[in-house]
Image (cartoon, helix red, strand yellow):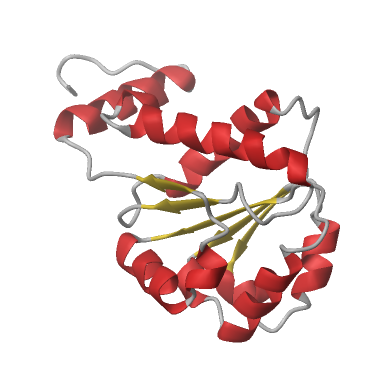
Length: 176
């Protein structure tokens, strides 16, 4: 879906390459990814396509993936979550909702051996900018940023065409 959007292909390639370079370290100090864009713009859909692409590049057969909302992990044992997810992907949605204590624990846990756990945080642009401003040390571990632009009508129509085709349907000219 996203590679046809101007500027997206380069951002996606950079994120995959960055994850590949960081994999040798076996920690999560680098190679993590920020995804931001408007409300309902497809951030989660993009991430769910990006993870298999990274796995393919890193020659990972299958990988552990967890999608959580920030408010679900606030107050939890973050070090234990990171240990359980080691070598996989931890996707944190609505990242601006992360509590200071959770960020501090996650930041510390990412310094140690995580078998290359890739943390992906996502939020709307304004929320992500607030998170970056509040926790610069933490967000410096996120060495790739994917910024989903506002789509044109033609791009939205193209998404609809692809989506319907993938689900075994077609769109007639009247619908176009």
